[in-house]
Image (cartoon, rainbow, N blue to C red; front, side, top):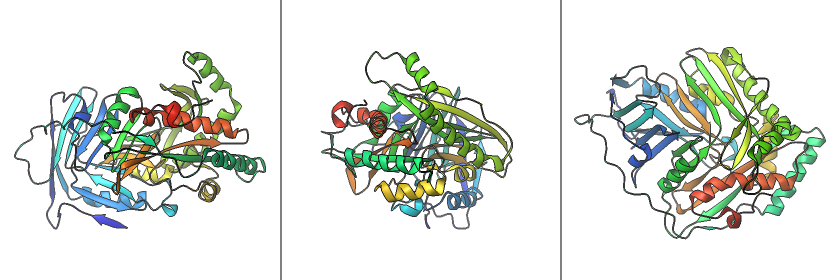
Length: 430
């Protein structure tokens, strides 16, 4: 466990100030071209974080939860808008999918400045000793497009990946496991260091219904909310089961109907819903699990979706709940321990923080944690390269070629944001 505290708290307390501001416009425009920054935005709402007041690198959500509790106790917060969801000092994090089998570290960072928007509420929070000015920071320089990006392959070829899917289908049909989510990667390399703000801008523009995130080199646009805790209410959106347009002009109503009737996708979805409901149950005084899923429509794919809600006590904060829910069957499989073992043995891929929780929490334990999907990781020692990830849930009726096509569809948002043609950068969905 490693903690790096950038500001020296010592025995002194830290001061935070939150003020109401006029509409700041697009939040992403405040992201700087250098230095640490974070973002979590959906439909224009959310926040950007500038600078780092403190940083914690760890292996577990539980350790991060303890650390944030300790830091929160040292912050004196003056606010013009007490009680508004998401305002005030926050911790923003990105956690590994499987800390026991990853060389990556999870990270929780406390921004020095937060600029946020939720509905008609706009705010700025500054953390630290310098509060002489509460003026908005200057907007960042224009984001730079990737220079000559090209796909350079992944950890395994498509033929190898489909063969592994076939092996997992055999394990499932032999009743050795019920569901396994397998992922593959694709590396994109450019001639110059990548500007993640460019990717973020295009994801926000093209996929406004998703949670667009930027944390410590991890960027993407995920449709799956692991949980939102707001006061005594917790909500989790479960996605599993996917269909995509095979050609322009495909009838979306027909695709949605096909998805809603697909026994393979319904089975995959039921495993995911059960895993989330079972994990939340010990923390909830009451819980509602819809009997049937709805269909979530995104620009390039559709998913079966179920929104689970529950009532929780003040002792169950957002990080505590995220630790209980991750990894769900939607990104791992079921039973969890068997699926993790199979993924480790067959996938031949360090997922890092892909498919792990990404989001934020405040000093009251409220917050939002999504699952880091439809994204990629840029590492400090390779700033010109981004590793993209996509996965597919494998069940007894899975067809390896169809699962490969599904991962291709899920790579589309990031490939488009990088300026690449998905039809040539990776096989088109079949």
